[in-house]
Length: 471
Ligand SMILES: *Cc1c(COP(=O)(O)O)cnc(C)c1O
Image (tube, rainbow, N blue to C red; front, side):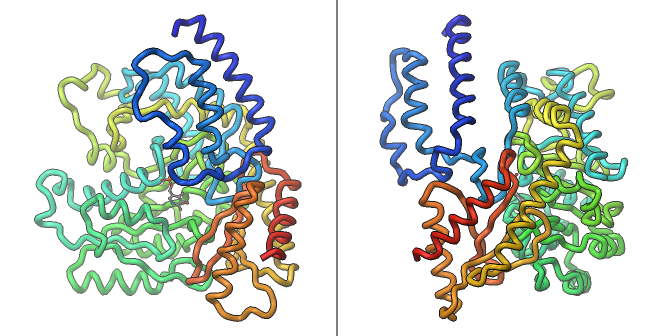
């Protein structure tokens, strides 16, 4: 392909993208294909001869698109969103065009310095104290792994990196039973062992029970275990419960334990001063992660990771073979030393575009709008006699279920709601997901998609009620 063909196709693709967004509601939100259907439509061998871009693009439309779940549809209410926005998409186009690999300052100074600047902006925007330093990671899972590895290294005075675990067995990490699976994954990868991840029970509202946390930490200390890290969930994945940070922070201070905060989804709400109560106790926090790629209109992937002691991070990860030495190393941020991968995408650009294009006020307005829509829907569900709310609503996630009169067994309720979920999603009109809270099958409805409006939510609710009458 030469540059003229590129230009022609690029214009066509933009036209397609514009039409895609205009018509996104006509696609089934959740892809309706069966397992292996896409795979079987693709040839077993690659083409030996060059194929033209029209043919490839046409296969993209005919084969690939049917197997896409449309996360940017305003009728997407499942999981947590991976929302995007036009300014973010435009920035990603430029990022891909430049195609820079931004591992070190010298490999693209703008990438490193823009990242430093937008992360400083972001720190202020979400109300973190100035002693935090930010770096962009790919995902919250990576950020949490980074935190646990840093905690491990700081705890061992960097000896585990040097000589392995011989003097450091029985390190302990604590989190609630409702925290995200990425914590367990990180503990396993970090060599600490799943058995040393202590899962603390939650109270009725799904927040970590601090009395039990204190009890386990003190018991572990007596038994010669080594409490090393506590992970607090600000916004659990099941129900966006907010663990009591302040009380946990006091415990961590008392016992000198690394405190990591996983605010992957709910962190965006910190842009709103009325939600800053969630980070009371932040002065004691060692590391903090939230995902602009979830609820801040920035394309996946973009995870904002903040640390108190950036040296603990760099000392854990820095590695300097000859071929990576550069002249300005001592004066600049080389972000390959601030995390796991060497190679890095230029992710700061899209965040910069989003923040500038919306403005902080514009972002706040959208977040508040989503929360207000969730509040309205929650009211409606409460007032519907055959439905019930299953967890307190903190932000814009509603946990509920169908509970018609005359059915009284818990297993029947679970089966009924599972059936309802599939029937709703099979309409292709909306997409919602589920979890289990306290063993109960729970429907999750998240209002956070960039272009969602009251009308979408109202229609979705009508659909849910109608489908419930059919089962
Ligand atoms: C989504 C989520 C994660 C994982 O996020 P990734 O960026 O996909 O790794 C972690 N923790 C919580 C609370 C989440 O909601």
